[in-house]
Length: 114
Length: 114
Image 1 (spheres, rainbow over the protein chains, first blue to last red):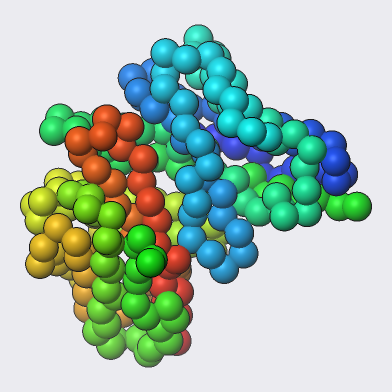
Image 2 (spheres, rainbow over the protein chains, first blue to last red):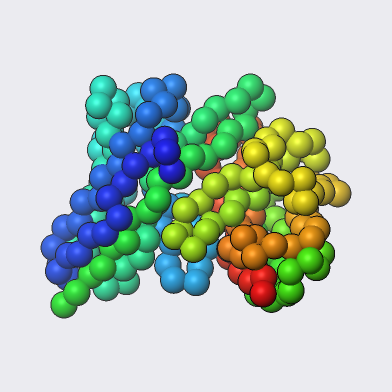
């Protein structure tokens, strides 16, 4: 997406950490999200971070947000073969009334090898 | 129980035909969306309805017409199908009252126009 950029591919060894990076452009985005898409499946919400936070940890997932640089990252600890998927970063474009639209990055394809 | 469901899962049709895709959510959400994912996995919002009212209408050909008979359903009708309409169409839903606005996606409908 033109507003959200991600690297397209990442290859890691099983057991290592994976770091997927994302940059966004809208500084007014209140929430930023990470979604996972496995082959032939829909998008699964992994985690989100509010814009006034720097970090959020959820089991093996750590999200880091640098609001000044508009940079978001997703770290997956102890990466497993089941983590192989496409990971989408998304920023929310808020609207009055409490509903929003998500602007997605192009997705990072994570390949985990033995 | 499936939270966001779509029918059909696969749809193969010829150019010029008219087809519909249906979406239902049982999450009690009041906002529903249609996204299009192209062959490069790029996701772009098409429409959004809040309480049966159209609130987002991106630059989409008017051959695409969404309809929301109630808060739990959002259908997409496509007239005069073209080759470029081939894609995976995802439905999503969210709640405008939760503040976080995270969207939950259906499994997708893969449309192939021949």
